[in-house]
Length: 381
Ligand code: OSB
Ligand code: MG
Image (cartoon, rainbow, N blue to C red; front, side, top):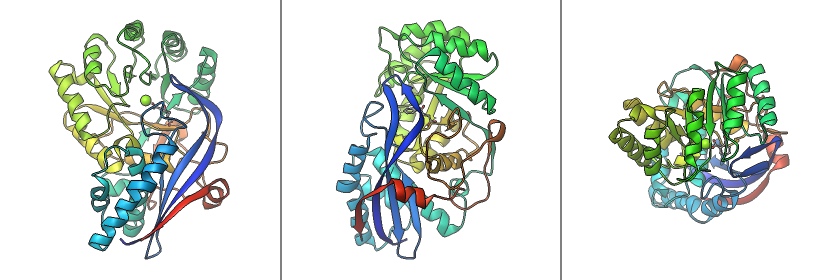
């Protein structure tokens, strides 16, 4: 594959309803997109699902991502192409920028565009390139409300649309109330909570009060960069502890497995795999397989991605080793006022079915992309 150009775009997407987490409320998100054009006329599209600021994690904001892409990542790819003539595989691509520490979100956008290109070149769906199958699987939703009433309204919509797994955002002072209300309203639903690292060593014990709600998991209660302390508090909670923010790589996932194993609770470790948080799909697939080898359950997290990003993640769920429903849909219809695929994604009765369509399985809406977005930079080989 010979790259002709790489364009960086910024696309503002407006949420249909605000999304609240322990670290803030989002209404509009500026999304970097990486558009890779090859000399033989193919175009690959990679979304970087940034949030507005680095409150979720370092380098998950559009400013850091654009700076990394423009200054280091994209130049490294062209430098490698100059050295070896072409970027034949995703491995070639990743090795061109492996030396850059961090910048996982930025790298994941370039990698996503390359997978899209490879799928077109081989005329295959992404799930097949990734060793999956045309699976049917249940999907979940994430509820980012800021009052119990708001949470219940969103949940009611989600359950009405057939979704069978609910995740609710919590924080100190807003945990038992929303979780208990959801459990009372839906006694049999798969229910999980996500703290986005809002608790400390003084406050995490509040979560023990939720242990009789039969939670599927408790996601990232402690610090965004911590694995060790999570492995310690996990011994004192009945619900499995799920890591999100603190897993950046296969090595981090292995470290977590080591610690949970040492504490004799490996069956209570769950890992949320988000491709952009781990630099892209190739690392994400390695994590999924490594967890599966040790019977550690995994699921695919979202970042309020556009339908383009969600479609790619749904292909990743084609891997048999992904165990639990992912954050692939919003609770009440589409996330955004204007989205970036021609057809909206749909999961009748909460079940998504992968097809044989080439690439992500959906058509990118170039018209909406062009009307909302701005081209920030163009690099040529
Ligand atoms: O921790 O999973 C998270 C959204 C923004 C930041 C962090 C998270 C989330 C979600 C989004 O829960 C879920 C989705 O994309 O559907
Ligand atoms: Mg999370």
